[in-house]
Image 1 (spheres, each protein chain N blue to C red):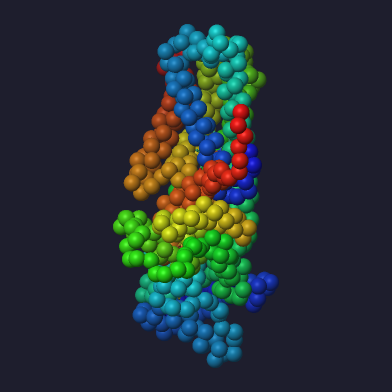
Image 2 (cartoon, rainbow over the protein chains, first blue to last red; image 1 turned 135 degrees about the vertical axis):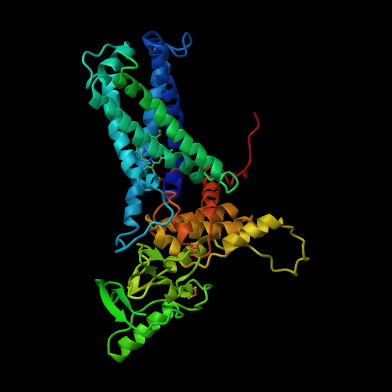
Length: 226
Length: 258
Ligand code: HEM
Ligand code: SF4
Ligand code: FES
């Protein structure tokens, strides 16, 4: 534990936390996207999938335990990820008190410079998304617990809601276009001999996640699913 | 050729600086950027004005003293060159050229374009050394080093400590410099005894100096006159994580039987 505390004293150490939690969040997001695609198999499949998440680990653990375990892990990762990233941003700002009159970036990509903004948008999106499709508090009326397909259909018939989701996952894709490569670089796992492959992996992950996530709201909007 | 120079002028470390316009005419394309500034300073001195303070020493790209941000780029528009290796033929007649000092909290401006880079010296002092024995001269080749490893260590060792990496980094991070210094010793067998102590101390010193953190933008690599690769940053991170989370495993002491 004291070793972890040592880690949090330096920017290099904080980046370790951002990278490791980013990796966990990325792995989870990828599974979430694949799970969502079950919507295309019809109401019965996606509703059964949602019910299955609650009985995960049965009969060894009580109803909902595994799901809540995963939720708590994700929440911890998100808090650590955002907390350490925010601390880094504050340090980085302080490290250049006087800005340049002229500054021409040479190497950095747009998604890399956009990380703070894309992360901030994601944070807002995550809250709205949970309020929408987990608790059913906003954007869907009536919300019926467990009737996943119907809830989706009722929400995404509204073009604004569907496009909001497409926009949010586009921002996620931008965050991960840089982030998935960046985490390997941070952890010292990138090297000139595998740099191209890792960057391709990050790009393909970002595009694949965007396509997979955006497909569901767009399909409801276009009437392919109803 | 004729140029309009917008130069950051600041009397002393605590002073409020501002950009001042200077015009200069009759510049040959074969003059180096620093020689052009020398000429400007001669003219300013003749007119009884204060010359522009800027750093330089070797003027051949090896010492790392020259340090100007020219039109938004540390060491100017060309890749893999220092300011002293930049020539006026790289500009167009009549160009307006903005000249600023390195900007970082850890590199305070002393005067005009001169900044205090002793933070780098303190990072080096914190761990940039190896232990050597003081006995008789060792046999040649008694410590074999693979050629690839030697070459990689030499790549890192070409860092001249100019600070362009810090100047280019939007976070004012000194990761490329520190990584180069950590790696050129850490890659070689001579550097192994202090490998993990070195990386911890140097990273902590970097922190104490007030440099920012890396967001893997890669701007440092693009500005580095020696083309030091950000792969060394990854390597330093890995050594640092190993050092903090694992090494050295202290197995001194006694154990009880059960
Ligand atoms: C919810 C709000 C979020 C915020 C505010 C946020 C913010 C940030 C920031 C500021 C960085 C550092 C950027 C850099 O070092 O270049 C970062 C990196 C990263 N983020 Fe996020 N992020 C958020 C959510 C997510 C999510 C949901 C994921 C995964 C799906 C994710 C994955 C990553 C990854 C993989 C990195 C790269 C780590 C590294 O650079 O070493 N982030 N994030
Ligand atoms: S890493 Fe490159 S830019 Fe940074 S101090 Fe060394 S030579 Fe200069
Ligand atoms: S003056 Fe020595 S490197 Fe430019």
